[in-house]
Length: 142
Image (cartoon, rainbow, N blue to C red; front, side, top):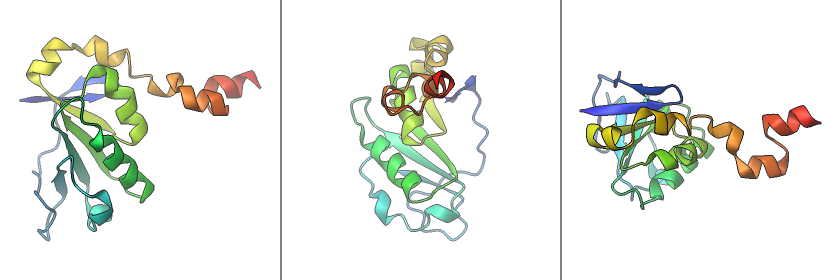
């Protein structure tokens, strides 16, 4: 089983349509991408409802780049990080463009919901945006 992590905490997976491995099927609604996939080469992205990007290791940050490239190319569907993403990486995942993180039950037990919720206010703690004056706190201070 797996647990979804969103800004509101843990939730059950509501996606019931399955995933294609490469997006080649005409009726593909969602695709699984490996961490070494070329996001620039994914031509079906606008038509997909969900893209799930694999994180084989918490030290493998290539999935963050994939998410950023997909969002910069205009993908507006659900973007899910799957695998070894730690609670400490949640804010980075959200900033990169992910909507949610899918973790296994073992990781959810080691890093309970309160640890993920501590990072759920990811927009308020963005150092670079604060420097640029783009944070809500900076706007209120003006």
